[in-house]
Length: 120
Length: 116
Image (cartoon, rainbow over all chains, first blue to last red; front, side, top):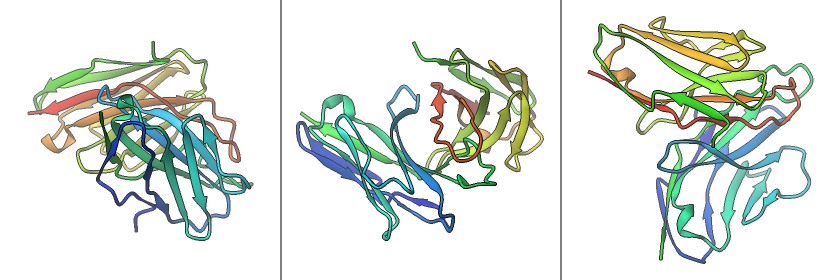
């Protein structure tokens, strides 16, 4: 079974509007972390935001926020006030085994990604 | 300028060739990774090096051979590849602090490999 599912292959949004990119995950580990990365056409993966499984508040980083619904196992990325430069592929990723005795270090499992296109 | 540099950016090779991908990180990190990104598939972790020691080999075929001479450099040696090995190969680094910590991975721009 897939550990990270991104059901939207492509999304379109008008400049200055908000957009939500969906991510659901599957884990039995009580300790885990969820990440969002952006991959522009240059190929480099750029870290955007992180949410820990025990974090009480939803993570925010500038125009990025993470809508974390633990019971639903979803970690959707919300981009507010979209800009043309936001057009890129977006990946959700998960790191498990963060509790005592876990050995995953930096190992991340990625979803298939969502291509976001921002229209002027 | 990115903290993780990969060369070459593009590589075309025949199935009988031997080539190497190079990755260098300027961030003072102690862990480095190779990921493979194929079309229409999620990124796949290939290898992890922590303090120059290989800590993970994710069932990668032996035609891919990693080398980590120091904590700043990582190589991926390629030989007798198959056309299905064509993909974007991404290198990443992090400051690994062991389990329980959120360390971010910093990626390079990748090497786009085509095997003919």
